[in-house]
Image (cartoon, rainbow, N blue to C red):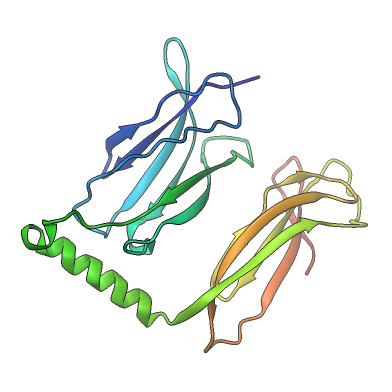
Length: 210
C-alpha cells in the first residue's frame, strides 16, 4: 500500500514544526526549509514521521540528532534511520536532512549561555582531534551462504563508531548500495571490522562471518 507521510520536529517534547503531507508516496520528498529556535545545545532534536489518515495519524518511526554533534555555520547531511520499538518491522526506512547550526545576529549578547554552549561545543569537537572522514560504500555481496527464509545485514565498526546496513531478503548476491561516513583519527590505529549477520523470522541473529 501507500502512505501519506508528514514530519514533526520536536524539542523538549514540544512540536516546533510540522511539514506538509506528501500524499500516496513511500519515498516522499518534502524539500522544505525551517529555522528552529533553540536555547541550549544539551538536548536532542527529535524527528517523527506519521502517516496521515482521515481520522488519525499512524506513527511511522522516529530518529534524533544530538545538537552538540552539529558544527557551527556548516551544513551537514544526516541520514537517520527511523525506529519504532513497538513495530515488528526491522527496516522502517530512513529520513535525510540537511542540518546547520547558526547563532542569530544579536543573540550573543542577549543569550550568553547559548554562546558559551556553542563555543564549548566547538572546543570539545576540536579536542576530539578527528582529522577527516572515511567514506565506506557498501555495494553488494557475492556467493553468500543460503539459509532458507533468513535475512541478511552488515555491521561496520571502526573504533567506537558503528553502522548497521539495511536488512535484505536472503540471496546469494545481495545488493545494498549504501554509503557510511566514519570519523578518522590520525592518532588511533583502529581497524575497520565488517561483520555479516543473518536474522530469521523469530528475530534470532547469527554471525555468519567477519
